[in-house]
Image (cartoon, rainbow, N blue to C red; front, side):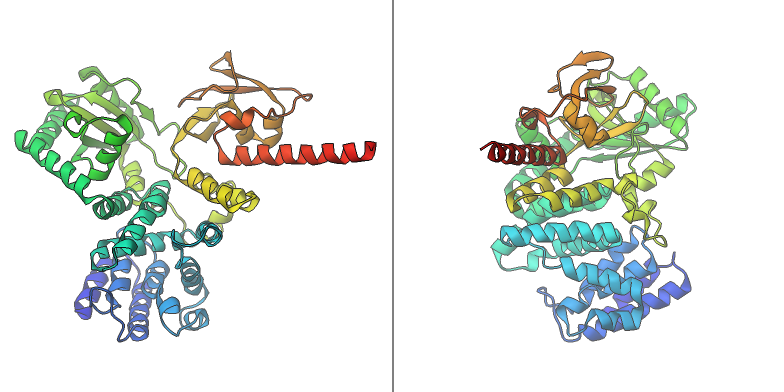
Length: 490
């Protein structure tokens, strides 16, 4: 079985150079020897797990060092081997990856708050040192979720699934790993709420039986429309995942029977210009749904994701969601950060102002400045897992903020001094209160005064965890100064 599994892996790494493939074979033999006689909960040889992790990593075309580290990732934790042994046999790069994975391997939501806080910190610190550590950890978690059924302890299964939804799935989302995110969520949902998942699947099967080929029929209609416009594109259609549908039901407070928005289509073009052209065609042909258009081409997400999103009453009078991407955008959407990560340049992730990874450094800074474990944990969850909006400075620079942010969040995002001196905001050239909720595409200008100071009220309507933390520090410092001054007067 092991020979057969390695044969599968060998076929999947054909994109690598021979020297990297030889390195991977060496890592497999080393790992196989280290895990000799160890079994998984399924009763299978333990070595099959690292092989499956390595196979998952090939789906995003990771480099040889990463795949070798994937094969070795449990050797230090689960055998008598040390990081020094890994370094001696595989060099500094791979030993650092394995060490990073070992440090975060005991991360668990069951830990006490202090331990959990430290592990949050370890998880993000590992990512800021080398993003590949998190990619390997995500692949490890994905295979563990695929085999979760072999765990007999129900509490452990539930905790693992909850941890996956609360930590690993949102991390996959922030890193642009959409396919991994969807599978992690579906596997966790299957464990946590199997009844709800089964009801949704039954509903989808019922809708499919009424319109058996509806996705193909709509795809055909869309293709015909684009051919009439002399536009060459690929069209991919699918039914949305059970977990995303479950979230929609909860967020919109609707019943399963009221569910209508279940289909999503991707239009893949040859260029950015063609994306906008296709969007124009769709909006001319079909009524579009207000508030559902998003332009992530002019304002990309922090993970590099670019696309146009819209929802329309499409062919067959069905409500459908459509995303428009170029071939390059599609690759980034499929592979996330792995599509543009320079593996031979590990310094890139350490540059604090590299846009794609700034959120990680911001979170580590926030965690380092949190005054309690409760604050640290809450801030970290908010910062990693929230949705984003994109607003503009008067000069046209894009500022990424959490959903429901206000001008206070915007001002501090520019600079803490701008935030502290803020007295007003001009949104889309009109003066607005500082508690105004910003929307995607707003242009914001902050009015400042050297005489101004933050108001205690700001903490109520600031959304960004970093801003709330800065405001708390400002008022604590101000209170200490007042006590000192009062003491001197006495």
